[in-house]
Length: 453
Image (cartoon, rainbow, N blue to C red):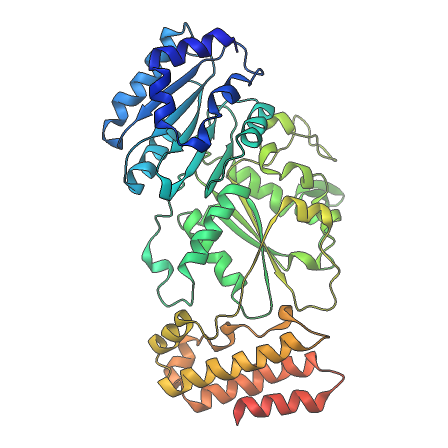
């Protein structure tokens, strides 16, 4: 980028205007933008925008400024846009419009100047990865949200809003704030592991997240379960016997899912759920996917030739619209630690038991559990979990989750009374306690008796 090009742009917009429209913490933006040298002949368009009502005009202006600089339609450029409105909804709308309609091969950095909602959203198209990394690290902003969308050319970014149907929460003991947090985490990282003790709703949460991201489309979500016999051949590709005799190369479940996901537009997420992810030999199952699954390597530039290549087949890569959700039980003593290479490529989120929360109390009441029983369930299970946490051989990862007391339709038809509560304790929780204290069966029996007393 030529130094004069940036200076000319700032002069056209008005350097004083640009400085006044940026908070003090953003005062370093101009020299930082000027320092991006990976993009020769690129333009910088510094604009100050108000509310989102004039979105069409504003986008025309971005394209017009691009033309004024002598840049052609295929020339990449970077737009630094400062939002000066007051409404959070308008800011979100502006981001959606830019994601959808940013002209040409542009990239945008959107700054929200409101002191109570300092946020930066970076939308990157055709922007060399090293330049984006240096930009993000150099800004060193103290902000609430930094969204890095490393996209392949022409890709439309995912809508950052959490606008999903309310029926997601109907009849479910879900924390809405946590659900929205997980959606944001998935959009940012694309690979997330939900971990927690038994009964905290890992599978339930994963399926609801997949429902929202995939819009309920049956072809845009899959569930598999890892186990000790699960292999690379099951997951990616391997030789399989034919009915007619001999062997043939057959794609594994994840390879087939990626093929299906590649047929959908890039702004339509497809969710792949791996239950019990730490039960399999993760490094052996994933193979080269440990690299390909990284969110900044989801395009043809990083495609690899798979073993046992089929005739006429191109190289393989994980499509950018594939989201991976792994589920991990923290109370399984038989499992080794998760491979460190996998940890680096996934974000981890720990789900907690909801005993004692208003969310769970309201859920039980809505299901028809009597008020005194609602309180007893919460109080006694909180006491039990505290004992588990304080035990040196167990800890927080062995607590008992709330889903043991999430009744089925058959339970509700029979009645959510003392008999139902006793049945849950005797047939589900007591056996779990006996496993926890296998070397002290008397303590396990006493704790179960205290739950029933």
